[in-house]
Image (cartoon, rainbow, N blue to C red; front, side, top):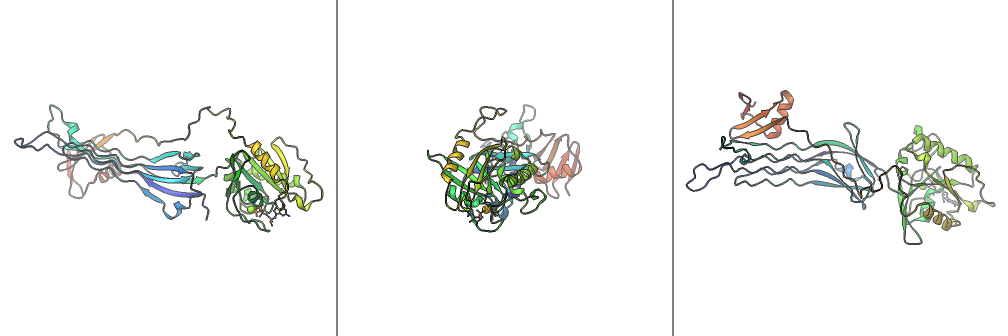
Length: 398
Ligand SMILES: Nc1nc2c(ncn2[C@@H]2O[C@H](COP(=O)(O)OP(=O)(O)OP(=O)(O)O)[C@@H](O)[C@H]2O)c(=O)[nH]1
Ligand SMILES: [Mg+2]
């Protein structure tokens, strides 16, 4: 089943703890501190993969945790960085943060990457804290927690052109005629229940992708028929192929019904250029009349998906209307990066630190209270009976 949405929970790895260790050598009973730093926790990364078609993989598994960093050890050995978790998503996936609804990333190109949860930094080992006055620091930093968040993934197909039209107009038949895709065609409305992408080969070796989506009916914006949620798959198309069954009724009237639904949906769909495809010409004795004057209509093609009549002309129009290099958007910067890498806000500056001592933990800086303190200490690994030192206060953890 084609899935264009998924909700996942991601958790980056915690940083490793800094080492608490002293050099041991022959004849040197107590050498200087030599605890190395903890490794960084692994990130959770999303990468757009051109081979994936939908988000169904994220319905069987929805929770992803990256590995924690290794602890620092003696002889200044640093802990290893935790492995990242790299999740492949289809090209065209938009990522939003469930907590605040912000768009985290739009993975619109193959290879686009985004770090959605950043691993915690490792704690510094005690070798970092030696000073002339404090030659034997008996503490080291603990690693920081990795970020965790809940994300909504939403696939919006990347197609050069997308079909729109009433059920039974022949959208799927058209995609079968134009492309390598084989969507189901049948003589009843709502045959197509899931979007399908097809690749159209051009005369000069160019290729275009065309999306076929379910039929749209009057009132779809109020949820009638299949509703209009799947119109998200038209949002990124540069051109709409507005397919109309010209053998039935007034084509101009049908055009306006669909157009009103596109406007209801919003997202600029009612401003998109449209190539009107008057289908089922084989059922007509005269060329289908079509008198709608609208500046968005960039072409009108009369075809029959049953006989193939007019399809070559339509293909030529399609390639002419989808130029190889998209015209630069005036408002968009001329050099757009090949892919975008968004990064979440770097973790906030530490107000306090949790140090590991040889007896337990010490909290330095502006120590928090209550639940926040508990969380920080638990993350550092506190257990019952362990000594915790905050300012002048020393107590046993319960
Ligand atoms: N005579 C004739 N029939 C056609 C033509 N194109 C499509 N059909 C028929 O029209 C019916 C609907 O075709 P589909 O391609 O499934 O239509 P659709 O727009 O994809 O329909 P939904 O997926 O339900 O929205 C099928 O029975 C097709 O065989 C045509 O050019 N001429
Ligand atoms: Mg169909």
